[in-house]
Image (tube, rainbow, N blue to C red; front, top):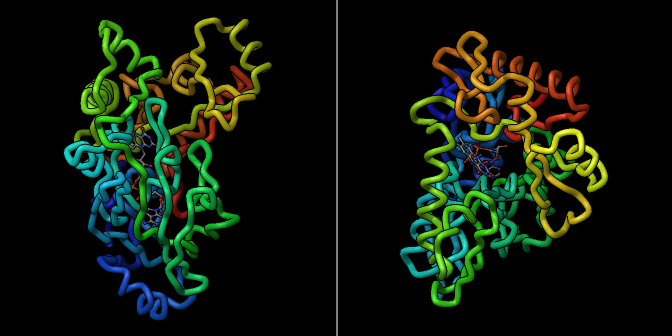
Length: 339
Ligand SMILES: Cc1cc2nc3c(=O)[nH]c(=O)nc-3n(C[C@H](O)[C@H](O)[C@H](O)COP(=O)(O)OP(=O)(O)OC[C@H]3O[C@@H](n4cnc5c(N)ncnc54)[C@H](O)[C@@H]3O)c2cc1C
C-alpha cells in the first residue's frame, strides 16, 4: 500500500498493510492477530519522514470522541484532529489551548513529542494519557507526571520506553486536558511574535484573540502542507548552557535566543532557523526537495522528492551547521523506518 496520502511530506513509501483502529474494543484482537510481527503507528503523518518501505503493518489511530466537563477537564480520542479540538474547546467556553492552534496532526500524537508553540507545551495542560499497552495487553492510564514530558520528548518517543519503531509498546487512545473557563483565563503572550501582535493593546487579549493571532502568524510564516509537502520545523532548536549562550551572543549578537521551559532554567534555546539561514540554505533546492524560501527550518518536497533525498539534505545541513557553529541540529520528525 502506498502511504503518500498518509504523510504531509507526501513521500511515496510503501507499507505491507494498513489497519484503521476506530475503537479500543479492536485492540485486544489486533494484538493477538499481529503477535510479534512488525507494526508501527501513524496519526496524520505530519511529523514523520518515510524514507524507505515500511516492512510492517501500519496502525492508524482513529478513535474519535470529545467531551468537556464543567470543571474544564477535556477528554478526546486519539483520532480527533488537534486544531479542530483547540477551536472547539474555545467555542465551549474554555481556554488553555489557544497558543497551540493550527498545529497539524491528531490528538493521539500530541503527547508523543509534547507539542509546543508560542510559549506553551502540551505538558502545561495535560492531566493524563490513556494508552493500549501491547506488552501487557491492556489499557493503562498514565498521569502527566509519568509521561516523561520535556522539550519535544516523552516516554512515547523514547526508544528506551516505547521500544523499537516496529514494536512500539504504547498506542495512545485518549488524552485528558485541564482547561479553564474563559472568564478566569490568563493568556500567555510573552512569546515575541505574540507580544508584538498585542503591543498596541491596553487590555490583555481574550483567548480567542490569541488563537486568531497564532493562526494569522502561522499562516504567514509556515507553508501549508496541502500546498507543499512538509513536516513543519525539521530540526529542534538546540538547547545550550547559559555560558555557551553568552559566548555565542558575543560572537553573533543577532542570534535569537529563547528562555527554556522552567524545568530547564539553566539552559537556553537558540534559533535553529537562524543557524541554517546563516549557512546559506534558505530557499536551497536539491532536485525535487529543498529548504522553504520563507522559513529556513522547513524542508519541503516540491513534488517528486523521496525520503532519501530529504534525509540527504538534512544531513548536508547538519554538517554545515556543525562546521560553522560547532552545534549539532537534532531532527524533530521521526524517521520511519528508524535508522
Ligand atoms: C506545517 C506544520 C507545522 C507544525 N508545527 C508544529 C508546532 O508548532 N509544534 C509542534 O510541536 N509540532 C509541530 N508540527 C509537527 C506535528 O504537527 C506534530 O508533531 C503532531 O503532533 C504530529 O501529529 P500526527 O498525527 O501527524 O503524528 P504522526 O506524524 O502520524 O506521528 C508522529 C509520531 O507519533 C507516533 N504516534 C502517532 N499517533 C500515535 C498514537 N495514537 N499512539 C502512539 N504513538 C503515536 C507515530 O508513531 C510517530 O512516531 C508541525 C507540522 C507541520 C506539518
